[in-house]
Image 1 (spheres, helix red, strand yellow):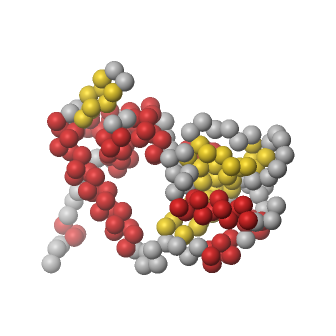
Image 2 (cartoon, rainbow, N blue to C red):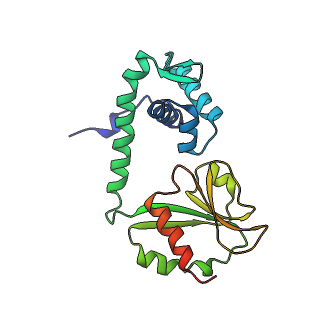
Image 3 (spheres, rainbow, N blue to C red):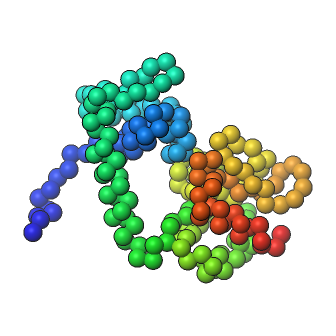
Length: 197
C-alpha cells in the first residue's frame, strides 16, 4: 500500500507549467494566451520563469515562430499527461458528469430574468455557477467562462451577443472566441434567446 504521507513533489508553479503546455501545443504565445484568457506577454513571462527555474531553454523564439527545443520536446509529453490525469481525476469527483460553467453577471442584473432553476432542470449535464457582481476583468483572468455585461459590446478576441434590442449601450453575453462555441456556452446562449425580454 502506498504511503502517501511520505511523498513530496518538487513541482514548478502550475500556472507556469500550464503556460508552457498550452504554448507548446499551439506553438504560439498568442494562441496560448487566447486559450488561457491572459495576455501573450503573461504567457511569455510564465514560460521564461519556468525556463529559469529549470535551467533549461524550452523554446527557441525565432522571428514570428515558436519552436520547441529538444528539452522542450522531451518535457512536453509528461506535462500533458500530468494535466490529463488531473482533469480525469477531477471529472471522477462529479458522478453526474456535469460540466462546470461559471457565469459572471454585472451587479445590477436581475437574476430572476434568467430562470436559473428551469435552466438547471433542462440541462442537468451543465453545472452552472454564478458570480455576481463580475466584469470583464474576471473573464480575462479566467475566473468565469462567460459574462453578462453592460456596455457597447465590442471586445477584440471575444464574441459578444446582444441580449436586448436598440442602439447604444446594452447588455451582452460575452465569451472568449476560443470557447464561445463549446456546447455548454451554446446551450446557455440558446436559453437566453428563448427567454422573454
